[in-house]
Image: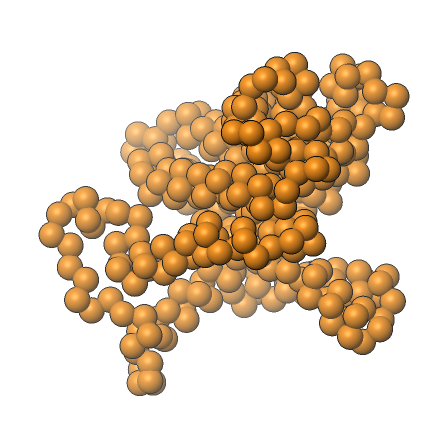
Length: 358
C-alpha cells in the first residue's frame, strides 16, 4: 500500500526501459534531488558539509567505481586507494599547469588519466582472477603510493612532500582553498555524484553492463557466446578507475585541500571503500550510496552518542567503530550477502502488501 505499482502501464519501449519505470520510484528520486539541490545548500554550515555531506558524496563516487569492477564484473580489486591517489595527483598537476582551465575539466581529465592507469593495471586480469588478482591490485596500490612518494616531480619538488590545492573558482565562485563557501563545495561534488550515478546506472543496464555480468557469472560461457573477455575486463577496469579517479581528485582538491599520499590514500582507504560496497550490496548502484552513507554516518553517530552523551574517551569510540564495522561485515557476508540494497528490496516487497501479512 505504501509502495504502489498498480496502475503503472508502459505503452512504449522507451517508457519500459527508462531508469525508473515505476512512477512512485520516479517521484521519490525527484524529491530527493529537489531537496539535495534546492534545500540542503541553504541550510548547511561548514561542520555538516565537511563532516557529513562531502565525505558521503565523494565516497559514493568511489564506491560506484569499485562496485562496477567487483560487483558487476566480478574482478576483485584492493587498489582503490592507489587509483584515488592517481586522480588526486593528476588534478594537482593539471591545476598548477593550467590555472585558467575550469575545475570541471581538471576533474574529468584526472578521471580519464586514472582510467588509463587502471586499464594498464587491469591487464593481469586477462590471465589471473580471484585471490591472485586481488594480490596484483594490492601490489598496484603499494607501487602507486611508493611512486608518488619517491618521484619529486609529482609534488612539484615540495620540501614537505605534500600537495596543496591552489584556490580555483568556477563561474566566479571559489570552490577550492580555505576561503571556499560550504554550499559551493557541496554543489560541486553533488554535480559529479549525480553525473557518476546516472552514467553508471545506464552503463550497467545496457549491453556493456550485460557483458560485465556475463564475465562475472561464468567467463568461459560468456566467451563462448561471443563476449570478448579482453574488452569487457579492460573496460570494467577503465570505467571503474575513471569514477575512482574523480573521487580522488575531489577528495584532494575540494575536501582535504592538502594531502600526503601515504596518509590519505593508503591501504586503509582501499579497504574502507571495499567495506562500503560489501555492506551496501555488490552489484547495486543504490548499494554504493547506502554503504557510503552508513560508513560516513557511523563515526559521526558514535562520536555524538559515545563522546558527547556518554563521555567515553575518543580512543574507545574509535576502537568500537572498528568492532562494529567488522561485525557487520561478517553478519552481512553470512546472513545477507547482497547487503543493505537487498534489505531495501525486501522492505519494498513488504510495503507493497502492507497491512496484509502475505
